[in-house]
Image (cartoon, rainbow, N blue to C red):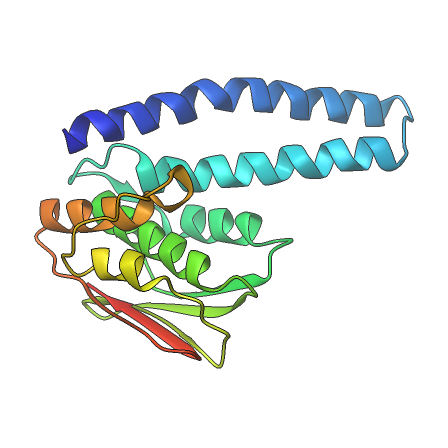
Length: 193
């Protein structure tokens, strides 16, 4: 079932890439004709944000073949683009190319941390050889029921589309043979796998 959901995520991302690219190309063509203004800047910013989020979602929710790697440069570019106008900063300290299942887990963990950090902060991501994500000196607002999903609790009945990553991360961890440890306090959070 998880493979089917991952393939669905891959399909949705794939089908949205082309229309967003066409909109981006249209904005560039308008700019080449000398068109400027706040309306065009708004469209340009929205397209860039959507493209960045879509690339991020493709890794987090898409199919993750164990023999595929994601290049470090691509991971850094995705994170930089996704957080460009965000309150969340990701300090990516996991050097080198990453096997796709591990990149998927890291991105799902980033989504969990992002949800628990509504005012933003800096999230440090390390790999040595296990993974850890940590945010300190931040205002953490972790939903205890959702956070408990990471370590094996059943997802709450109120699970919504915006919080599905809490239920998907343990499934992806099990597929990768990883165990998740997670803690969240008022000023810090930590996820390891």
